[in-house]
Length: 282
Image (cartoon, rainbow, N blue to C red; front, side):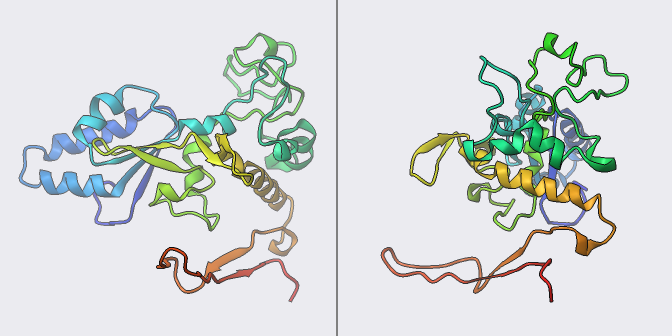
C-alpha cells in the first residue's frame, strides 16, 4: 500500500512502537535507494504516509524514521493516555477519570449497565470483573485477589479500566468535526501542533480553553470523552437489536456553502448547516 498509486493519505497505526512500520520503510529503502527511482519513490511515500503513534515506544523512530524519512508525518498521541490510558487508583483519589460532568460515564455502575452487556459487550474489560486474557499471567486486572499486587492499583468493581492505545485510532473516527489531514483542527483524538518540521513531527497540545476561558490540561481529549463513551454505549446497544430501526444512531451534519469562509476582521460571518436524525419517525 505504501507503493501503490493511490495518492490518498495512508494512516498507519503504531500501538507499541514503530518497529514494524520502520521495517517496511527499510525494505523500500533497500529496494530503491540505489536506483534512479529513489527520489520519486521516497517523496511519494513520505507524502502519503501518516503514522499515528500511541507514543514512540521504541528507538526505531528516533534512529531510523526521523533521519531517513524526515518528511513523513508522525503524530505522537501519547498525551491522550491521560484520558484513555490505564485508569489506576492513585493517592486515594478514587475514580476521577474524565471531566467532573462526564465521570459518571467512567463509573462501574454506568459501565456495567451500558457497556458490559450482551454477547459482545460482556467481553469488554473493566476493573475486578472476573475476566482475564487466557494464557496471560500478567493480566490480573479482573482478579479481586491478585489485582491489588499489580503495578496499576485497582478501583471499584467495573470501573473504567482501558489500556489506551485507541488514542491513535480516535483521530480517524468520523464524527463530523474533524479532518484527519489537518491535526490543527482537533477531533475526538485531540488537537496536535507541529513541533518539528525536520523531521515532520506533531504532538498533542498540552492545554486548551474550556467554556469558561480557563486553560485546562488535557482538555483537547477530555472535552470529547463523555460523547465518546455515550457513542460507545449506543453501539453496544446495536449488538442487542436485530433491526437497524431499533438502534440509536448519530445524526448527520453537513456544512452548507463549503467549509472555507473568507472574511475581514470585524465583519459579520453567516454560517449555515444541515442536520438530520436517521432515527426520526417519518
